[in-house]
Length: 294
Image (cartoon, rainbow, N blue to C red; front, side, top):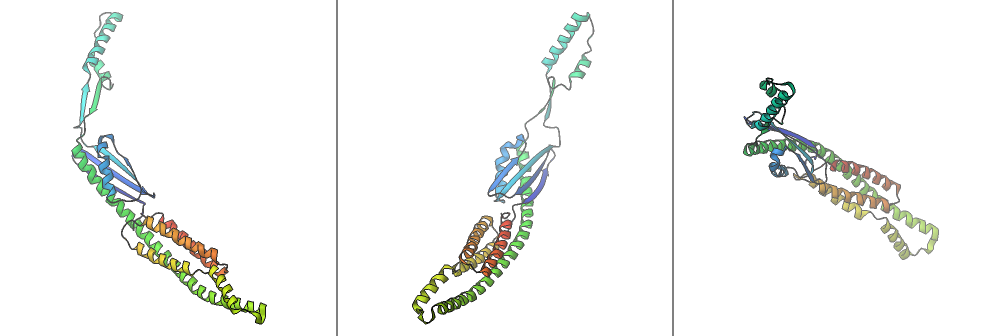
């Protein structure tokens, strides 16, 4: 069993690049992948997505990819000489027109404009995609494995809590089954005695049995109890699976809750009402945990 909450981090590098990948995930009804990566590896986004999908099936998963260049081999200095020439020519002409013949220190001009992007530009050449693809794939795979390990560790804790609550629910159900057997017999005896006290010797036994059967049928919860035992057996089996079981557990909890509600609506006995409250409390605890199961 795995939780949908976790975190994984990994990096890969060569002489030119260092790739860092961080992945975090939280609860979500489906698999919702949000990938944030530099533009230079946009073409690798689908590969990143497919790599993660092999391991992660549910949750909102955010992926952060950072690329650091370890060398300047992909950078080029471009000097826009025609623009520089035009600047120097215009400066000389304007200086001569305004101040007469004067020497223009070209070196000073160049020193001033070297940081102006219009004249001197540092361009990023296209990155080596094959190098980056290898590094990104490696880092994403390792970060995904770390995320999966984190989710599995938290899932082990959830499994322990679910198992404990499943046993507590089974215990309540077993006690309710035992109580209901005694309650039905006592109800029959009391009903029959009251009718005899009220009607005396004129009791029609056939009519008595018919009326009793109708009353008992209205409050009969044996069918619901049987289904609850089946559901709990199924629940215990699902907990032993190694696959993603969150949706299956969520559906089963809805069915269990529905049966418990039916028992509560059928019976007027205060003791049975108390069992219903206890069982619904346990089911709610289970539901809270199930929401975080992949």
